[in-house]
Image (tube, rainbow, N blue to C red; front, side, top):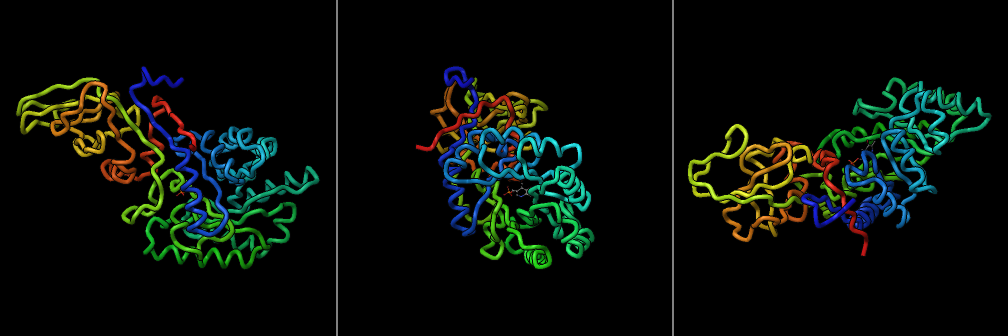
Length: 365
Ligand SMILES: *Cc1c(COP(=O)(O)O)cnc(C)c1O
């Protein structure tokens, strides 16, 4: 339950910005856009995000797990939901029951899904995921070779609704691997039965029309992350993580702060202790490195992050008082700044935000 009177921390999620970012993807890629809402829409709340996207005409979603697809199905009943994990035999019943479309990741899965179709005397929708060099998920090259030479036979019982691949380095527009994967993907498409194709996630959306094909699958861009950190961000801030000051104190030069006494004041210092910690997703790595912000003014994190608390130097911000709201992600501290301080990626900053932090979804105006 959300009760602003007692809440100390909040993750507010601007659904209007998600919608804007979806449209920005459509404009940049000039193709159809699916919503990637796996991992609870990257921690922001799958249900409200999926609803907001479906309301503006998004008719295709991607999740990772079967369970996510099952949860999403009643929320967006009239859409296509792809399950990236694929279709091992024990999942077939549930995939069909929830009208989920698996992305088949191996010849084995193609055989299993075909056998299920055959035994039901029907054909089943499927996506085929070709691995073009990332070597993570999808048919590896030696399996893709078999598939293209025996496509008629092996895909006989399936409706091939999508052929997809995934880029390993699309966060870096200068990476040679992008063009290499594009060439491999085109070669595979040329030898497979005609079907809609999809290569680009958020990074791919930034790589231009060549990478757009028939469907792009952005996730992080919808949530305001910069798909290519270090370049200007085309996407609007969606997530704002704030905590409140629980206590203020003034310490003398030479005093230390927090576990391990890792910070020592070099001047008389005003400290604000805020009710957010690593159990809420603020990474320990930002101890003595990260920043919070009060009304756009930055305050450095001092000392270690503890489970429920973090301490900031607010000496330069005299307006700070008990109850003052401090931003850790939002309009001042971008996901990318937070990620750099934590030595991680914008993705992990979002997905790490703890279950304890209430999500407040701000609807489109
Ligand atoms: C997670 C994922 C996406 C979305 O990636 P972003 O970088 O967040 O846009 C797209 N496709 C696949 C296969 C994924 O696993």
